Image 1 (spheres, helix red, strand yellow):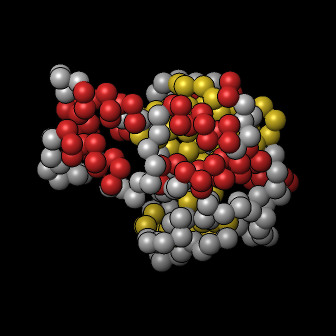
Image 2 (tube, rainbow, N blue to C red):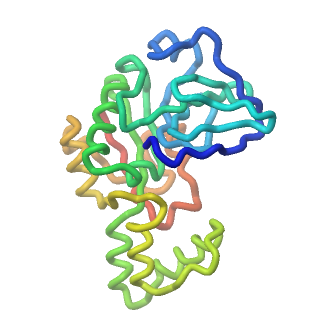
Length: 238
């Protein structure tokens, strides 16, 4: 994801991390105390994780991230501006887990396979990727549901997220998940399992989960509640 870059303000001061050059090594990751990689983080930055996105971020003083430059945001929060459709500049098998929330739908199907290969490369043996993405099954079953419960709830969530006067028509609800937000591919569980297998994971390693439920509390507690009504939650075990 390299086009339409945006500058997003953050409150904490941005500083380059000294003497940390790409590619990051296992020693670098250990020294920084990072156990996980957070892919497609935007400004939802977590301490103890290597947060990563293609966006350039800036602080209130005008300090700005640059592609390929590891920065700290505040005391112990790290961000790497990086195009994740390309090879991620980090050594093999350095993370215990990976987390990605509503990222994979923004890249093409083939790019998603290549991204999963990279995550598999970066995970240690027995490492876990937790990802969430809009659930195609919920949108299709919601369209066929005469009670309209799902679409009514999601209409309210869109309003809460700042979308002004979203239509309540079922056809609009289906089309917006494909056509808005820069989405390129919408998944159900079978589709996620298919691309995971194409990336080298075993079929049985792909496990469907629920909101804030899973193998590792440190990981699943990162799920955002605002997205829980529409999301498919999956853990993929290396």
